[in-house]
Image (cartoon, rainbow over all chains, first blue to last red; front, side, top):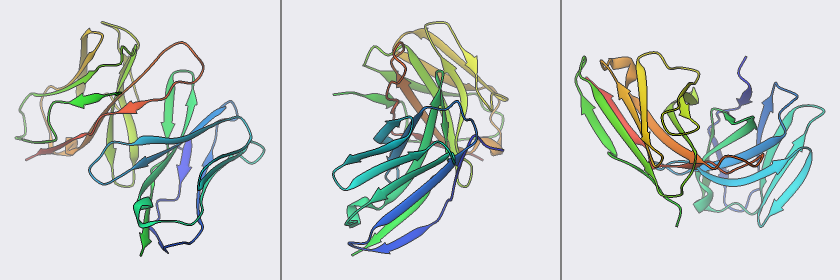
Length: 109
Length: 114
């Protein structure tokens, strides 16, 4: 079992839709959780990170962690075509990062 | 501006060739990482390094070696390239010390082994 599991999609939504991206993780010791965004032919870049449980909001993006169910979510409000990318969830334990496989998102104008 | 650079964006090599992938970061980061990224498998850690001349195996080190002679440079070596090493290779770096430090990625090298 992978440490972090992610539905690969692909996901296709109309512009303005609310997008929900989800991951699960297996190690209850994980405390740092990240979302990376990767545009085509580029390296991933950090979008948001959260510590432990709860929500974190940054503009149109909200990251949510539910440690009781080992569930990580990223919500995108008012999605834009520029949000079209692959989104990777990740957890940090010690010095090692554990990544999901990524979800490909396309926002259609 | 934070920067991780990789020596090539695209590389085509033949089976059996020795391949060097170079990564340089200008942020004085202690930690450096090499990943490969494949469809459906995501990012898999090949090797990482916490300091100069230090290296640790990741999840898939077989067929690869690394070298870190200077803090800013981390090289990935494919001793004898094989077709199953065709992939996107990503280098990353991060600071050491605090519980969480952002990992910065390079643009990637797309390697094709024929």
